Length: 405
Image (cartoon, rainbow, N blue to C red; front, side, top):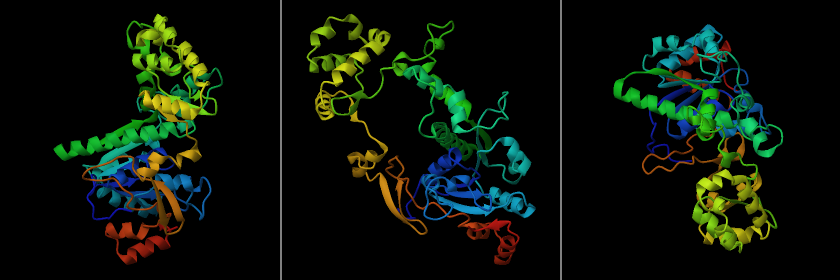
């Protein structure tokens, strides 16, 4: 882990993290990587439910939790007890950011809505990550990644491309994408507060975020009023747009520009065919027959091995990459050379593998300063920072208002 004395971009910023599962924890982990002091407030007795997903060496320290909660401190606090709510409000009083990912109505019921928090901290950035914007008929509905993938249109595009059934991404795609968007919104709000002193509430709804993400490419002809064609970027949705099967495996190649295609046909010994087919020679024309030309490329790729194609296309400056599996990614030479994977000794879990921040900074590096916490590992420490005496802390533990797993 990096030295604690090294300066970081969000050093001095305190984030009170009321989030669970994936979306919110991913966002707050990034803020923690950037230097913020993230205090994860968990509900007793077990804490974040994601702690229990997947294999683990010790209870409540599963792999998904470990990958989403580094650079955080944990306090187990019962917010339904008056003393717990009081402690939470004290914590919010000293916070720069309060982040949550339950429906806003639940925060109001807890006594932690924006107006309630703003009374104790007018300068707070109050960031909500939840399913649907407040102004529409879906506002009160629950949201999980699979639901948002379906209602946002992603699952249907898998069926459109493959001619098969609708499917979900094999990753919590909407959670993570919305979490990244939330990081940008929070840091922009912090910059605004730095200039003006003004705090504010920010809503980052999954549905609207993911629809914008999808339709940025696929609104397409419907961008114009009246429409100049249907929705759906034909290159992106082409059924033949897939990794190419070779003689002994697969290869990923993006043959895109006019020069790319001319060179590719030449490598295949079919330069005359390319020159004699006007619909292949320009990007505009290829877009109209993209599935046809991708299918033709697929036939050509089957004539050589993966290694041969990677060598030929690399030499020709046509973008190409191997097709990795989850297992082979762990041995990727680029990731190993850039020290992407970190083997670290966790005090309760032993040796674990985490991934460093993908960002590179010349002055304020993002790094792993704290390993993922055990449930309530920092409960007493955080209460002490809020001004509670040792006797008061002991009393809160005795009443099980606060716990340490």
